[in-house]
Length: 384
Ligand SMILES: Cc1ncc(COP(=O)(O)O)c(C=O)c1O
Image (cartoon, rainbow, N blue to C red; front, side, top):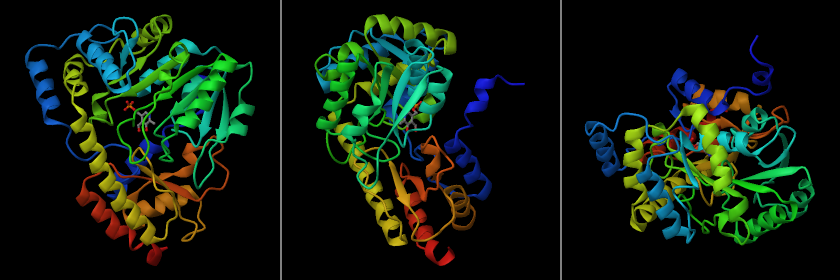
């Protein structure tokens, strides 16, 4: 019999929908990975590193060049001083950074606050750390943080709050005021902020504010981000956690025994990307805005209702004007009959049995892919 803990969470629905997309030959708007190339200079740097025999284990917590580039980036972008020797751990993606942080910081029985809907990894992370998740709902259509509910969720058992902004799946970019409230509550309740800032450069409105830059928060924040989304290289598996020295020591220990380290030649190339200037990031956001507008236009025409994302590259769309099916059945139908794979909305909620009529579309795709998707979406109403 497998261990009991594995019975309490399911396989990733998002990654399962990629398999469904293959099964039906559907356009994969389910899993958030780009179908366009990553930056050429990074590819060249990776090839050069491999040919230069950077092919053995890097230092377990990350090659010095990448850690330095990460620290320099935080100084440049957020005016946030980071000690690359003591405060940075390079991991196999933000996914591993989050899991290692949970295991390093959270004791069994501790409460961890998670906004709902949430990126599906946080649920299993909580279970693996034997923590108790406390869910704070964000409500459509504006998905704003509800101050009363958030205050009520904090208690003396709260160890941490997970703060993901820009937010997957809602597309919210939390405002300064919302983040200030989270900071205030962390300080009052002696709690940690564990952030997921993987979409920090994919924004259409608002600015990105790392909570670690708030007064008093640097000492109680683990800032997690990665290269997957910013540099369109989800398969490279490069992420990192920035935390105070004592907690970094704990995160590094867990990380070492989970994975030893992230791929050495790709870390060398990652350092090249981290040094890109503002032009790269502005261009990235601009291109994503065009993709967002294309998909949102097609979804609105097709009869879906949704709020326009302010950041990240997803649209959580309500289909109740078209169908009474539950979201799992509707997603399967969209994949098999319309040729578009999506993620059932319930996979972003802890209670997957509650009736929901939303599916998530990802728009990290080439214009041609999205145009083809738009043609297919125009047939939804007729086929439904
Ligand atoms: C909010 C969020 N965090 C983390 C990840 C995964 O990041 P990584 O590829 O760095 O593990 C994703 C991927 O979709 C995501 O949406």
